[in-house]
Length: 203
Length: 203
Image: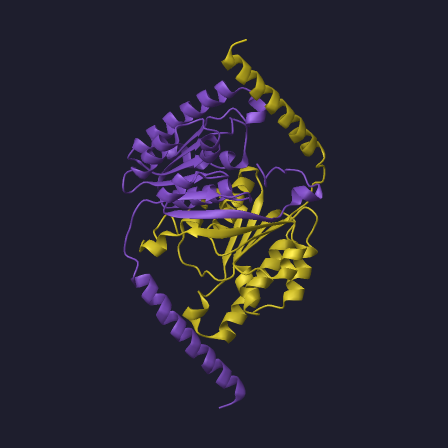
């Protein structure tokens, strides 16, 4: 047996052992359930990953609901792309912009309450399999909505409903109720190098 | 002035100061350029956020190229969703599965080289504005491709081309060349609670 053949054989044996471990792990996971997913942290990609999940769900023929708690009705690439999916996406941009744009706390609270009412209606719609609550964490952080009530409604969702919540500074009570939590960490950002927010990338 | 009015006025003044800071920051960013974006880390959402970016780019009328270095031609929700966009997405699933599935290093290397050739062709196509190199980091980690050559090609991309590279364990040389790096950190995962990979969520 040549040296190359020996290396190939060792690689094959190592990978066969790894495959056995992997297969056993997969076989050990049998539960199917609607997940409560949280994307938080200061890095990019929290809402973007939620929209990637939406694309996957649409590919599987699901209906999807989106409520944006901060963003208003301004034009974004992700929204423009959804035309072909017709009424399979119920998209509600219920925000009025960032808190420093409105400069009016009472108005921010009223907008958050209206968005939450819309979120509850989508969660109650049995034709919807995935609901994205974009930037809900911001509304919770500023106490625009009653945390205990929101977490109870999310935790008490129907068994087959997946919900994604995005935004920095997710509350510990929400993380405790979640099935999957990813923190997006900022390692390097082009804004720091003077690059502006660009169409097609940031919006 | 009532106590409520006083609080509203303080909130307004605080937000006005914050808006001034925010506006100055935005005004200071003037550069437009194609970005090299890296999604790495052990958490979920690396590829999913790349597909969210693809959706945004499609909404802006761009053409997009995708090369998957590990995943083979199996069916995924994200791919099934792209029908309406026709030839605006060039999708190449060039992998042959995970290393522990093939158990053949020479075959893995050949697949990675073919995928990289496809990636270079997409990057050279001036009609393509966004190229996603899904799990390229895995191919680099296992030395299936020459790191210096790959990083030089990515760093030397055309000025208006955005490239997204995904996968765990991104090489430091790649991070050094990147404009935007996000690390997806695993905080809590439903697999640990025995929940299986589910259609519409994981694939």
